[in-house]
Length: 331
Ligand code: PBG
Image 1 (cartoon, rainbow, N blue to C red):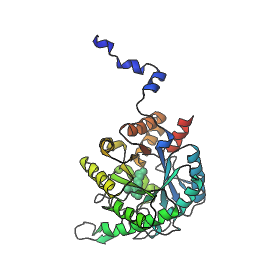
Image 2: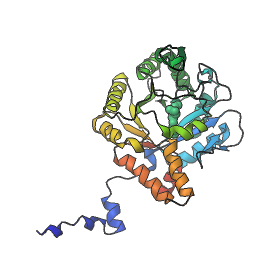
Image 3: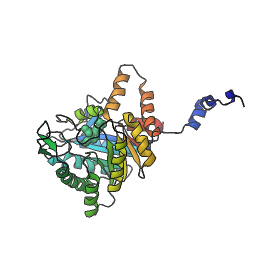
C-alpha cells in the first residue's frame, strides 16, 4: 500500500457520495423555533435587529404555529412581551398574561403536532429587566442584587401557571441556583407529572443576546454576570449540567451555541439526558447582516452554523431559522 492509496478525497468525489457519507444531518424534527408573542398588537411587527423575525399577535402566533407544524419542526419556544412591567414581574404569573395566553393559543394551534415550550424567566416581565427579583445590597455597586431564593418563589408560581396553561416543556432560563429542583417539586406537588423541564444548564452571560433584548423591549441596566456563567469557564458548564440533572431536568441546554461548541461537546459526552443548544439572536443577526451586505452566502452560512452545532453534539437546536430550514429540508 503506498501512501497515496489512502485517499480521503475518494469519499468527497460526488454529491451523491458526500450525501451518503455525511455523519451529521439536519432534520425538521430536530429544530425548535423561538417565537415572540406581544400584548396589545393585532398584526405581526418586525423586530429591527432580527430581520425576518416578528412579534406575533395572538392570532398571528396561531397561524405561525400551524405553519411550523406543517413544516414538521419539533417544537416552538414562546417568549412573552407584556405591555406592563413591574418589580416582581407580575405579568408572568397572571393566568391571562400574554405569555400564558400565548401558550394556550399555541397548544391549541399545534393540535398535538409539535411540542409547545415556554420561557420560564422573569426578565421580560420586570421593569428593571433582571431575571429575578431584587434586594438591596451593600456589596454591589448598583446598591442591589438579584435575590436567588426570593426569585425561586416566583419561578415556582410561574411554573404552575405555565403548566396549567398547557405548556409541554418549561424552559428554565433564569440561571438561579436550585431553580430546577424547586420547579420539579412544584410540578410534582400539583400533579403536573408529565410537564417536562428543559434546564438552560450552561447559560453564559453573552453579548450575543443583544438583539433579543431589543426583541423583548428589555429594560435591563447593567448585566447578568452574577447569575449567568462567565464565558471563560468550560468545566463549570459540566457542574451546572450535573446539578440540573440531579435536580430533575429532563433535558439540558447549552447557550449560546456557536461560541460554546467545546462546552456542548463536553456535555454531549457525559449527559444522561438529551442535550440541546440555543443558537441565539446575535448568532442569527450576524449572519443576516453579513448576508445583507453580500459578504457571505446566506443559505450556506445558515446550514453550516446549524450543522456545526449538531456535529458538536446537540440533539436539538433552537434556531430562529427553524422554519426556513425545515421548509428547505422538506423540498
Ligand atoms: C432569558 C432569555 C434570554 C434569551 C433567552 N432567554 C435573554 C438573556 O438571558 O438575557 C436570549 C435568546 C437570544 O438571544 O436569542 N429570558
